[in-house]
Image (cartoon, rainbow, N blue to C red; front, side, top):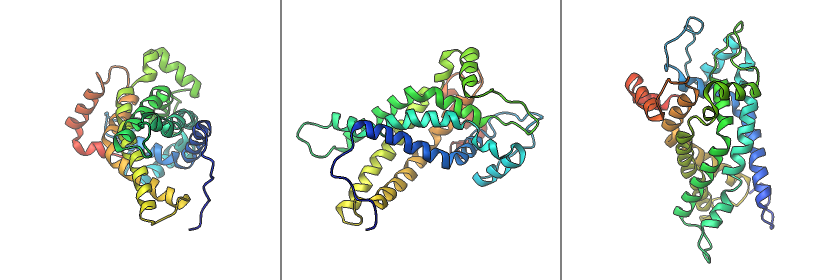
Amino acid sequence: MVGLKPTDIPPTATVKFLGAGMAACIADLCTFPLDTAKVRLQIQGESKPTKSVKTIHYKGVFGTITTMVKTEGPTSLYNGLVAGLQRQMSFASIRIGLYDSVKQFYTSTGSENAGILTRLLAGCTTGAMAVTCAQPTDVVKVRFQAHVRLTDGTKKYNGTVDAYKTIAKEEGVRGLWKGTLPNITRNAIVNCGEMVTYDLLKEMLLKYHLMTDTFPCHFVAAFGAGFCATVVASPVDVVKTRYMNSTHGQYKNALNCMLTMVILEGPTAFYKG
């Protein structure tokens, strides 16, 4: 098997912490246009169109990207990138970087391998910690991505710092932590579906000697885990995005956002984007 050979010395918690954050930032740079398209599709149909955006309708991921480039310019695909990188550095560092350490903390003394319940608990713990710390960056990122600005339109925020200040001024400091509960719920599902599935898939590949513990093995396990997590977490992700992007008083809470979406758009709206 061609790949990088694993080192005999395990990485420290600090290396895992920083490595996870940096890796997530690199991934975000590559996939940010897709994430922006996802956000636009998730909020589509939520409110009545205004005169300035009434003709804009998105169809599919690549159709959304094409429409955005034509109507708002190519840079619109990277709206909110600064906040996105801030989110990844703080969020992924905790969620992924501390996962092994937390898993070891929950593992009983004398046990060589952590059980499924221990992995679930570790995943939910690191996910909740990560959301709590990174929620303001996520709110700002989604606001930038969701804002439709035509070529001759005006900006909603004059930069990332201005966005933090404006949201705190107009909605209070609590506005920066808007949607924390649905975000924690989403990430609990993602952690259970992604982190745990990754561990199980990787162990299965190694156990049955299908692959060796190298980069290709990690890639296959991560691909399968990401797919499973996305399918399971999509409904909560849509509700999270809409609630974080909502204006003050638009929804009473996340549950009201979910019920409104189901009543007006049907259950298929949970899988927009």
